[in-house]
Length: 118
Image: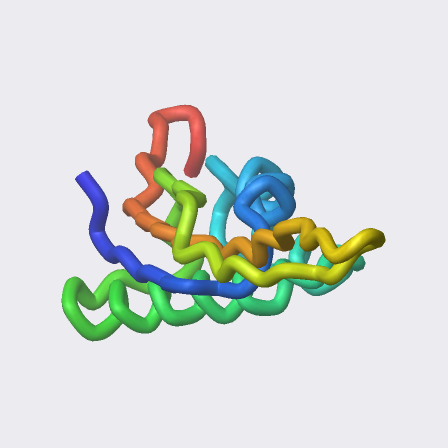
């Protein structure tokens, strides 16, 4: 069960590009994910880090859970709105340009401490 969630809607970058970042941070602790995103040279890494920090704040205010106990349990990147534009081409024709957006849903859960960890 998710302890905290956060959503980012209509982020103006294609979902295919954002999923690359989501696959890197899925299943990691939030501190490790934020450190990874800080060094990543992708455009989606800054909004993804901001979304993780928002979910951490949600966990602190609603459940009182500290950041070191949280793990990214679920992250989903879906298709958002698509702006359709047209570019003029030769002989009076036009070719479509599809400007895609993404919806990102993030869920954090509390890390289960095993008996071998102390």
